[in-house]
Image 1: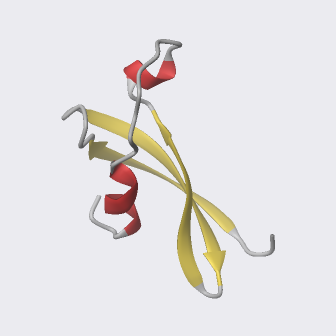
Image 2: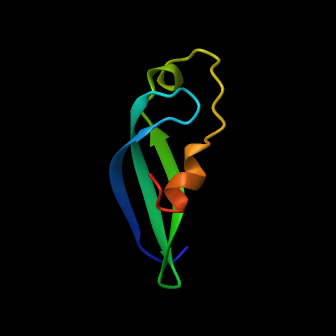
Image 3: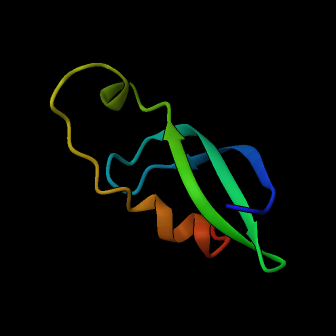
Length: 67
């Protein structure tokens, strides 16, 4: 995969948990356009080994530039 990746750290209010959390977001440049490639979330419920489920509903808001 050619192109350049960049990382960005941001804080958002989790749409599912309604708490502030920190995200590490990876963007990949494709055809001169930034495309969201991955998100790492510091929500404590998701970081330990409990069977918590996340729908990653923040993804669309970040992709649209709303977060």
